Image (cartoon, rainbow, N blue to C red; front, top):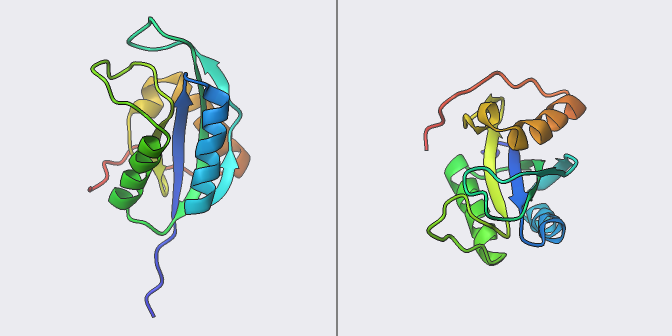
Length: 142
């Protein structure tokens, strides 16, 4: 019998369009599609890049999924789409929800953790609270 691998994933979550209700909704959707373990506190952050927009609220979620990296990442983008996210000309523009994989099992898979406090602060809260041992950056084969 082949058991599916359980992948532990930390997701960075952000919104600046009705942020708290949309973060809550994304948590509810993820809870129905993965094993939800932990949510960091939400923090309010100034926009980065495109500044002519409302502040963001950011958090992070720890979940477990049996999906592969590619399939899980696709499912996150599908959740964004279902929630009404519009991808416009301004990449850093306003958004209903943004869901990005930051850690996959024991590794950071994006340098965003090292570059943006709106990512690292909530992620660090999860790492500390759950006593996770994240080994550092590793490029993931997609």
